[in-house]
Image (tube, rainbow, N blue to C red; front, top):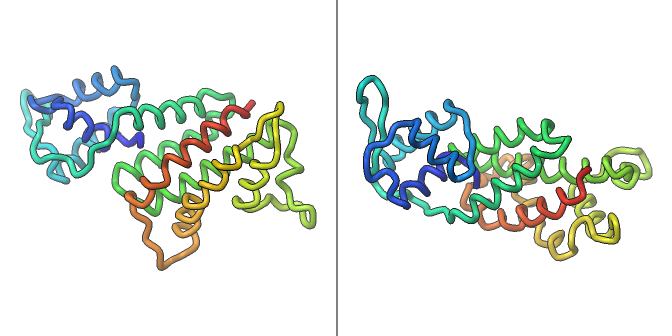
Amino acid sequence: MTSVIELIKMLYVEGFFGTWRSMKEVKDKLTNKGFNFSDSLISMSLMNATKKGILSKRKMAGKMEYSQRAPPETKIKEDEIKDLNKIFSDLTAKSLGERFQQDIKELNIAFTYDCGNCAAFILRKILEKTIFYVFSTNGKTDLIKDKKDGSILGLEAMINLCAREQIKGTHILMPKTARELSGMKFLGDSSAHDYLANVEVKDINHQLSYWTMAIKELIGNLK
C-alpha cells in the first residue's frame, strides 16, 4: 500500500521514531525512500498515528514532534510498498496520468483511515478505468462495447476479453492473472452494490498482489 500511515508504521519498525522527529524530518525520510506526499497529508497521517497510539507528540519551539509509543498493529514490507508506489508512478507518468490523479489521491486517503469499502471500490475503479484506456488508446474501443446496445461491457467481461485479446502478440492480461482478479472484483462489487457487506482493509490485503500484477501488465499496453 502507498498510504502515508502505513509508511509511518514502516518507519516505526525501522526505529526511525526512536528519537523525536519533526514533520520535515518525516517528509525528508519519505522523499529519500521515493515517496512524495503533500505536507497536509503527512501531517494528517501523523495525527492519525498518534490517535491510534502508535506515536506520541509534543510541541517544541512552536513545532510538533513525534516519537515512538506503542508498536504498530501491522508491519508492511518495504519492497511491497515500493512496488505498488512504482506502479502508481508508472500510471501517472503516462500521457493519461492526470485522469488517475483523483483516484490515487482518494485511494491513499482510504488506506490512511482504514476505509476498506472505499479502498475496494477505488481499486476496482482504477482497474476498470485502466482496462478501458488500454483498449481506447490502442484503437480497440469497439471490442469493449456490447454489440446489442453499444454500452461498455461490465468488468468481468472486460477482464475475460483482456485474457483473450493480444496487443503486439502479447495478451493484455495473462489468463492466470485474469483468473486471480475474481477476488478483487468481488470485493469491489460488494463495496459498491451490497449494502450489507463491510469490506475491511485486511480483506483487501489478501487480494492486493493480484491487483498489482494486473495493473503492471495493463500499463505496459497504455499509449
